[in-house]
Amino acid sequence: MKTIYADNAATTAMSDAAIRAMMPYLKEVYGNPSSLHTAGQTAKEALERARADIGGCLNADPREIYFTSGGSESDNQAIRSCAENGAVKGKKHIITTAFEHHAVLHTVKKLEKEGFEATYLGVGADGFVTAEQVKNAIRPDTALVTVMYANNEVGTIQPIREIGAVCRQAGVVFHTDAVQAVGHIPVDVKADNIDMLSLSAHKFHGPKGAGALYCRRGLPLKTFIEGGAQERGRRAGTENIGGICAMAEALKEACAGMKENTARLTALRDKIIDGLLKIPHSRLNGGRENRLPANVNMCFEGIEGEGLLLHLDARGICASSGSACTSGSLDPSHVLLALGLPHEIAHGSLRISLSEYNTEEDADAIIKAVPEVVKLLRDMSPVWDELEKGQRKHLIK
Ligand SMILES: *Cc1c(COP(=O)(O)O)cnc(C)c1O
Image (tube, rainbow, N blue to C red; front, side, top):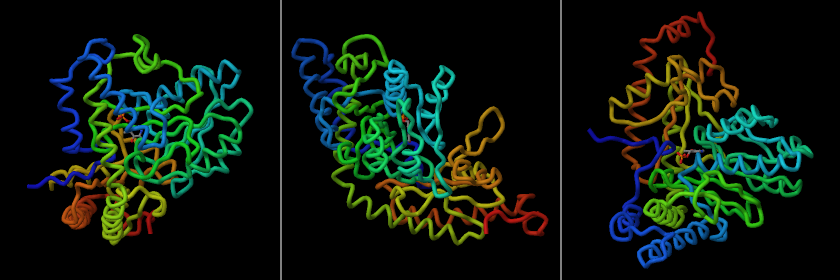
């Protein structure tokens, strides 16, 4: 049985070009970039080439790119740095949204325990925040606004350029978790008025454990990992050269193929959405406009997302559900709850995230398998039985 991988928002397969770009740095060019000998300096040159390439893809200066271990570390460093810099000036207020990735949410929550105040902006039923909301939430003591570029569960693309403009106008630092955006949709840190941006290689066919933080020149960046003077003293630790070179290659490839991939993936995405919306009492989560080209997120009334996933897996389809199994109880996704979905509905969610490696046949197989599994699960579901008998009211029309 062929496996259909449709969980690319969780992670992607590395591209052949990225693997090729990585290989020389695992064996031949293994010098430490901090070493002064030729072996070290050859590695250093590769590192700086990767920095220039990544900067080029974002319209940033290479000196504004700091390599990290991935999206989580970049988010942590950006938010911590802004909080510390703000606190020095008596600014201890942070603005974010209710549906950020946990790398952002948990960092902000921790800062709240340390004496910061946070505003969590609502995201509306379609999964968008507005620049107006940000503007209204900014206070004289606001140290940071952090709003994700695109949501990892429902795929909604936020009005980052407008939010950035509002922040710039107010003189507040603006960070964006762009892990789901970079390599998938055009991102230009200058045009988008972004001060700080997080990205991660494994979300665009690069390797796991490599990422970057963009920090606009002139903005002070606090060190998060103490030690050596790597990354101009902002991030200690011997650089993951192979991973970094592969990341740069993957990003160049993603940006070069973006236009073509976007057209093809959007068509596949819409085909799947339309196919699955034929299932009675189903809904699409997140607006259809301004949505990542490869994201499908739907709810099916009367079933559990976990059951759906396991049955799809048994048929060779890898997808994801919003809910995470914590301490034996099923917590619905904070993202779907932020969209205002009731718990019962949020439990029956399915995320299908495609990549350019998916085919038309994959989409057809998904459109065939999901309705079958939903029917199977509904036939066994006591909740569905009550809905059918009219003992319970349908929450999805
Ligand atoms: C995957 C992801 C992260 C975490 O990135 P890692 O490189 O896995 O640490 C952060 N934010 C978003 C939106 C993501 O999708």
